[in-house]
Amino acid sequence: EPEVTQTPSHQVTQMGQEVILRCVPISNHLYFYWYRQILGQKVEFLVSFYNNEISEKSEIFDDQFSVERPDGSNFTLKIRSTKLEDSAMYFCASSQQGITGELFFGEGSRLTVL
Amino acid sequence: KQEVTQIPAALSVPEGENLVLNCSFTDSAIYNLQWFRQDPGKGLTSLLLIQSSQREQTSGRLNASLDKSSGRSTLYIAASQPGDSATYLCAVLPSGANNLFFGTGTRLTVIP
Image (cartoon, rainbow over the protein chains, first blue to last red):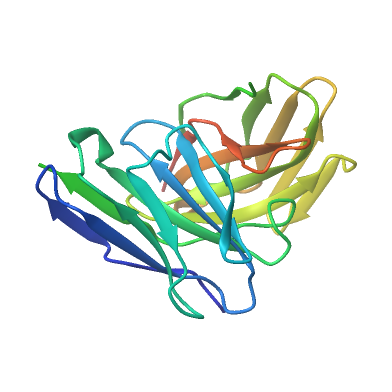
């Protein structure tokens, strides 16, 4: 069964460093999303991406964050100058129909900022 | 802003018992509601998606209902098994919105 895959599964970084989280969405999906979950808190929306551009972003998704689809298969989230409060599980999701259809999530990338 | 609440936060039941998980949302203007399962340290697995025009959806031992006017959804799990132990999240898509609003989840433990 097709699935969304994310790498790395866990990354530890020093405060101030840049990290790139990678996602391979399901191949025939056109809509891509990043969500995050800080330990013990709700899953929160970060950004949605369609047709090679951001379609919506939350208040959390400020200039520190960026997304890119560098090729036909990967979808990346870059976090510049990481802060302690960026420590969270980051989930990538994809959908064939967009937000009104079923979202398929990856296993997540756990980011720990020291 | 849509707020999604799930009660109880944790639930422990003996194997074989039928159970109900609750989800409530503050704004009834929703497009759909989705139930997810999350195993510890893992991603989200979609269980059921209910459109706003639907009253319920069924998949195997799972049945989700939606009462949009009262802002409530329930997930019914029949004949629970230890393998059902996980956190169950509901997520609401408000009408006109482009992102899901999640609840904090109910952590279910099914005791063998």
